Length: 471
Image 1 (tube, rainbow, N blue to C red):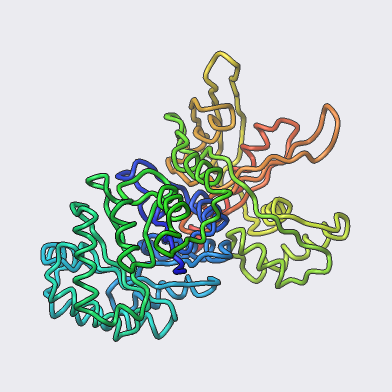
Image 2 (image 1 turned 45 degrees about the horizontal axis):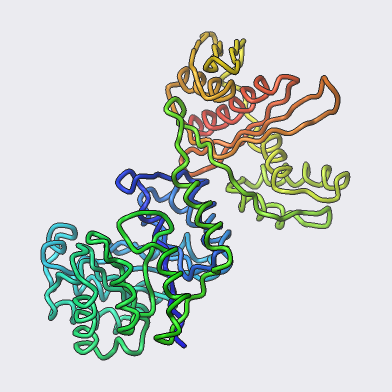
């Protein structure tokens, strides 16, 4: 029985055109959910911002345990090297070389003639194969390509080391029997395809993507690109259920965990389509934390590796400070989890002179009025004020800070913890901001949780400002 691999492209498809966008943290959560579902491949978008996207790839690579993590490689000289430096720690890495093969898209998107494209395919696939054993060649718009060129491109990619070749019906205008005929023709023209994995990507322009994918499997394809949410592509949930119910009739199966598929897909749908507030740019989705702990017996390398898993890039000096603080806590608590380590990093690493100081704040909140915040902050001798409304007092306060500084930073995480007990208990908050691909965490403590949140945000903000001014 052949195993059909499902390659999820939800993250690659995300964006305004797809109807949903994902924050840095949400992409990591999406990868964890897909990995739990045991899809064969999780595809990421190509590197655009080297620092930010490399950090995302590294974070996902460390979080994914079962699935292949695939990242596209650009056709320039160092494209493979850039991606591999970020991806190489993945348990199952894959490099993708995706090129348009139809005459129109080749000229319009890549600005290359056929001869130049074949040379680029050979050089890029060879460079990828030298770094990674799993290399995929993706023929974009293959169904509208000239057969002789498509044949040459596929043979070139296989000779250069591609272990998977994927054919895309980008326009989505083929009926199932037409797609079957196309695949049979290309199988006949390129006998080498019998020895490697063949994948398909079908657009749903005619609402026939799932049917075309099933036809492709019956014709010999062994990998299907699909999305976990509604986009113009094969639906992961539908194709998995079809293969589970009818796969035995043509001797195939898929490894997706059917017992969990409905629950996990519902979680993914909420993650992608939770409506963001019209007032607030902050992420408001629910997240699940990884289950891991450190103990007093862990050495500095284990603690620093755990901090890296949380997204921190610590200098040698800050790493020593964090480890010393960790040892003090670990002796008392015996076990230190991710939230405690976040608080340790926030209070120990990159302690800097404050650029912004909180002078005063007034918060208005009730169950019938929209929350508002009026903040007064000092920067040197200047006193700055901001007034904003938001979805709750803390959201309003953070928006007021952004109004004052004139910048928006992605709120990667926000935690509230109790420090003392009783009616006058002290509350501690940890705020993690993402700037330039790096996480900065701040801590605030107060009997007023809103005040603690403002102090934590300013603490993280001051670290960003200090590092930007001293680079």
